[in-house]
Image 1 (cartoon, rainbow, N blue to C red):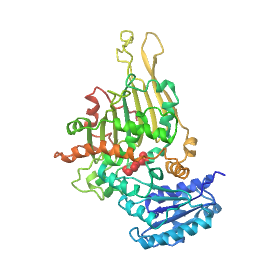
Image 2: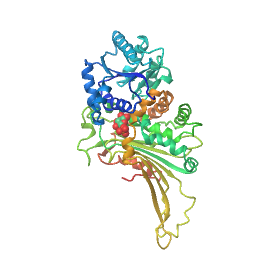
Image 3: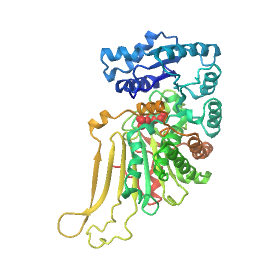
Image 4: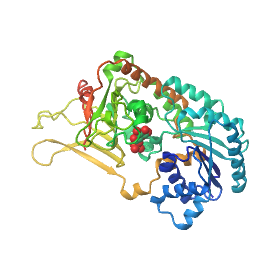
Length: 489
Ligand code: BG6
C-alpha cells in the first residue's frame, strides 16, 4: 500500500495554522490513504486541553471537507493532546513517553515528523530538547518541519539555523514556503523545461523583462502585530517572491531531482545583484495603504499597528541577475496588501522583432504589441500567450490575439492544497519543494540591504489608496525604463 507510517508531533497544535491548514491537510491525506492505520498525531501547546477537547477542535477544523461519521471517528481517534511548556525539560520526558507509547500502539516504526507551527524564537530550545530527551528515534526517520519567518535578517537566520543544525542534518530539515506547494508554481518547471519553444528563448536575447506580481486584496486582518514588525519585504519578498525568481531564472537541471533543482536554484539566487544604498533607492520602492475604494481604514489604524508606523504594505523592485543568461534583463517584482484584487501572476515579456515591417502598412502606425507569456498562479490557474495576427479585412493591420488556457473548476476542486502536497513530500523525504539553508541565506542578503537603506530614510513612506495597484512610484519604476506593468484585470 502507499500508506506512510509516522507520528506527527505538532508544536503549536492549538494555533491558527494547525487548525486552518494542518488538520485539514492531514484529513485529505487520510482520505486518500497516504496515511491510514499507522499514524498518530500529538498536538502540544501551553493550554491544558483534554484529548476529547482536542478531537473536537480537529473535528471543527475539517467540517468543510464533509467527513462521514465513520471517517471522522476513525480519523480523530489518532489524535492526542499533551500540554507542554517548551522550556521545561521534564515535560519533554512526558512527551517522549507518549510518543513511544503511540509508536508501539500504531506500529510507527520510529518515524517522526516534528512540526514547529509556532514562533521561531522557540525553534532552538525545542530542537535541543528533542535530542537531549531522546524524542528523536534511532530507527525510522526524524524530520523537522518549520514555518517562516526564518529569522528577521541574515544574522538572526544564521543564528536560528545553527541552533537547529546542531540537532538536525540539512536533509532532515524541511523549511516550508507554501508557495512551493502551489500547483502553478510547480508548473513553472513544466513550462520551462518541457517546451523547447520556451526554453530555447528563455534568455536575454529574446526576453525583454520578467514581471512577478503577488497582489492581495485583503489588508493585514488580525495579524497587525506581526505584520507591523515585518512588512511586505520580509513577509513576501524574502521568501515567496525570491523563490519564484529562482525557479524562473535557474539553469535547467540535469534531471528533475531534488539535488539538481536545489543546486540550480541556489546558483541563481547567488547571481542576483545585491544593491548598495544608492542602487536600492533607484530600484526599490514601497508604500503603505490608506483608506480607499475597498476599505475605509488606514493601515496605521489597524489593530496591532503603531499609529506612526512606517512599515511598508507594498513593495516593488527591479532585480538584476548577473550571469550570461540574464544580463540586462530586469525582473520586476511587486506585492502588496489591499490592492485591487487577489492575483498572482508571472509575465514573461519577449523582445520585439528586429524591425517592424508593418510600420507603413498598418494604418494605426503603432508599435508591434509584445509577445507575452502569462502564468496565472491564483486565483485562476493557467497560461496565456499573446501573438500578433492580421486583422480580418482589407489592408494589413496587426491584431494581437491571446491564446488563453485555464484549468477547469473541476480540476481546481480536485487539486491538492499546498500544505497537503508539502506534508506528503515530508513523509516521503522529498525536499525539492522546500527551501535549502543556502537559499534562505542568499535571500536575506538581497533583502537586508533594501531594509537597511529604508531604515535610514527620514521622509514619510509613500501611500496608496486601498483598491489601487500601489503607489505612483511603483509605476514610475517601470516608466523610467520605458516599460509598463502588464496587468489586465
Ligand atoms: C503568507 C504571508 O506567507 O502568505 C501573508 O505571511 C500572505 O501575509 C500569504 O497573506 C499569502 O498567501 P496566499 O497563499 O494566500 O497567496
